[in-house]
Image 1: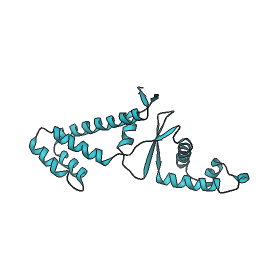
Image 2: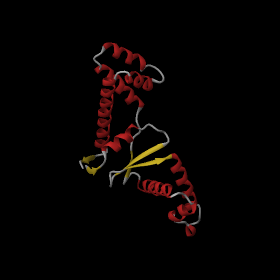
Image 3: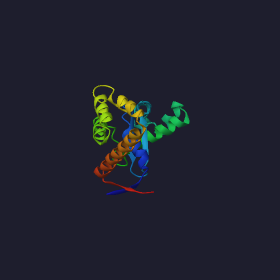
Length: 177
């Protein structure tokens, strides 16, 4: 089992994101969560094309190809990080799973079972049917402050549980800071 100091709240946020345009990776040495957007991946591929499109004698260094792109410092930093992820994927970096909407939907169903107000529970059961279920669910809870707060605590606890299950599958033990 690998012991790793990490920011659990950052990892929970990464788990919660279902964005198709963003991938997140866990650095197994630092515990940091690295973000890679589709735009950064596309730019990285342009650099790789430039670096590796020449003969073996003419191969360009990554740093030189990056410098030639003339990008802002923040983007260069993200590209250097993205290159490190690509080079160390599976060894130093692992992909953080994206949020699963089925699990999020099940969280709503399980939460509804805990709602003591039968009228509210029935309304919640109805609003989670069909398209827009998450938006309607949250909208209805906006009018019930106490249940809304309870929902967020419930959802966060379930999400943290999934994070710990994933870490256990990856044989990672969290070291508290």
